[in-house]
Amino acid sequence: MTKDSKDFKVNVSSEIGNLRCLLIHSPDSGLGKVVPSKAQDWLFEDIVHLDTIRKKEYDYYLKLLLYFLDPEKVKGKTTEIDSDKTRSFYKPAHPNFHASNKVIELQFILAEVLNNVSLKKEMVAAVCAIEGCTYHLQNKLNEMSPSDLANIFISGSINQDEMIFAPIPNLIFTRDIGITINQHILINKPAKKARSRETLLAKYIFFNHPLFANYKENIIEIPDSLQHFLRPGEENEQKSTLEGGDVMVVSENHLIIGFSERTSANAISDTIKILFEKDVVDKVSVVKIPHKRDFMHIDTVFTQVKRNMWVILHAIGKQDIRGDGSEPIDHLINEEPKDKPEITQFLKGEISNPKKFNSIEALLDDISKNDLKSDQKTEFIYSGNEEFPYDSREQWTDSCNLLALKEGVVLGYDRNDYTIKGFKAKGFKVIGVKELLKQFESGKLSPETLENTFITMPSAELSRARGGFHCMSMPIFRDELDG
Image (cartoon, rainbow, N blue to C red; front, top):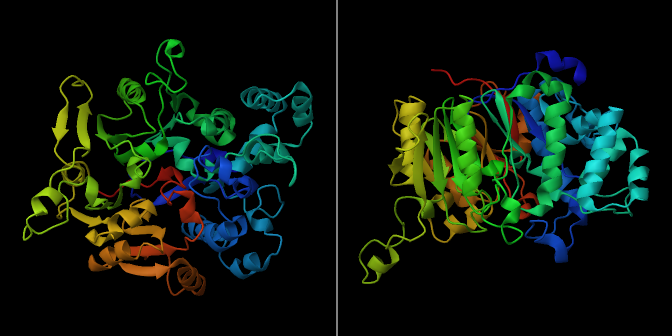
């Protein structure tokens, strides 16, 4: 992969421009070692079946990405790949690994960084310090090959039976380690200790891998607030935390940051100052959502579909949908909740005079019309198609957490039937990923001509990990939006 780095570009200026390059991490063996007693500590709601999540779900995601971003790697090979009992195409350490420089596997480029002997020693020492390893174990890790060591850093296991520290199963959600904002990369700061190793690995990759060599000066780190370590409590309010699910690049000059249970006010304040000082964006909108586990990040409650279309959870919108006024208790049911989002917009040079929005819809409508210059009415598709109780049920399984491969072509879980019904009502075609791949292979359809399409992805196990495809992607490069 390294030899192609001279043509590598970093630039994301929207949520819906044609996706050309992204960073992912396929499910590793650490996912299969999450135990019930540690699931919540490791930020999982449940334990998942590794073989199912790999072979029957995530593999389809990878093949779909390759068809859109790097078709030469997969076209004409699907039968061969699917019949490969060793799954060598999917294994970063295997000679037959796809090694795409457009659908980039994090573990693969981590191993490439570890080929540098001095960096390898640094990383072993850093990981061992975080994990409290013995000196003897540290020496043992220094003797490992780069590919084996990359796997150990991620899975926590030296081999199938020997775990030496906890896995980092959330690494499949690459959105949370960093965000590309125009030609800059913002390295995030996770709120939970279970994800601290992810950030360490991300820093070494972004600062040291040849792909990012031309962008070292554009990598942004968020400092902790001064003397935060003197504050009482392990997770005090002065600590700076920011996760990628709370950051959306909605236009070249406009960033949305969510103030959620995982992203702190201090981190938001510091990020706004840094981005304005570096002239990365001119406008930042802060959306404060209820600090609840079922909301987690802003991309669990809304994402973009087209420049004039968004999918959103109605419960955080401008009005509650229940009741029609015909019953005496309707005024109680329809009473505005106290935990509605608060939306504040800051402009560079006018940070002391912020603008307020009275609803999520008002903010998104403003983005569509004024930032993206849409001349069409802004439309909203609501989770569960506004039908109780499917609105909240399907939001829990990431109905609002969609990834746009290009404008109007999104992928999401097949289990969210009522939300999909809402897409159909807006004129979207709905097609399962397995059928779509067949039609790509036969030439009946092509990624270039696909439009207004919801691609349904198998979700029995992936959805239990509590993250959708927006979470499972870190876009590195998108085309600019026309107009």
